[in-house]
Image (cartoon, rainbow, N blue to C red; front, top):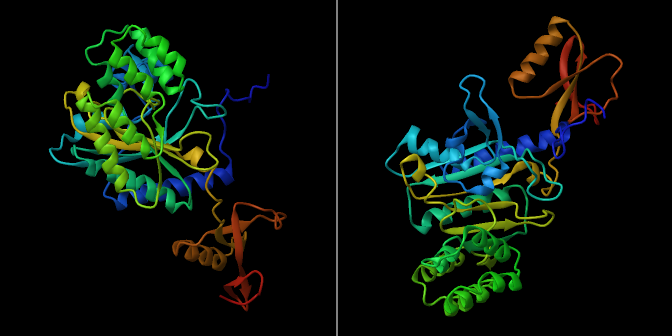
Length: 388
């Protein structure tokens, strides 16, 4: 095997794709700033007990672990940034009111979360802390949708669910952890026979509710069906009411519901959403409410947010045009160097062509060139030869 072969599901990002990803990163951070979100940069690794506190088994399995050579303690390479942002909100900022935070950086996964996915996503996310009302849920959703529209994705579907439904149905019910995990898997897979088998020893009303739940996905009619099936559970009825309110505020958007959707990490505690776009193998954006996420850090605060992988996003958005640039000869003459420096100071990209490489293609659209005319360096259009 070649010494230069990278691990499975790990890849270099070459200039064309890297340029596109970086432009998307800047666009998304600017969009978040436009909503009032402040940028944070959590570390790539930290002590494992802090990184994984309260996050559940799924995130633990996705986290690379290593021993710190300085302290001897176990470190983790983050597989998700939300727990770190919750720690920052709870311990470092410790603000009393609403806090809006965003981030963009790599995360590492021990396994790809879907076929052909990278194990090194570039995760962008935005989170709002300190407000329990659906206004925060709606703001996060609107930011996610506006960000997709900004990169010319015209068609997408918002799928709504709620993390409170299954725990509410199991409240007061004795179910072994293994059976509970199996039930979650069967619900996520829409495995009706599996749900029937795993709930056969539960009370009749609970079993009937779970059998109904596995089929509750589709358009808005799902909510009316759910209200009949879950009338005996006030927490579920509250969740359905909030889903209806949020859906009513998403005008002109295709909305679906999947009340048995349990995919993602265990810290979700309320309304959840996934955004699907043409060309992506799974949801491009996932988010929702996770009011419990800060409890392990000693500060339980309302929280809601979303995240996406910019490496996946770049595969489904239209290709962005090359940056316009000025082609210039390479040289050491003072007049030439001063002309090039002046153009760069004005924000222009000036590509100096090395001798013998005049026809090479690169990642810039050199639509102009710097040429010497009667002793003066002048920028001219490449095609017309007219001075600009």
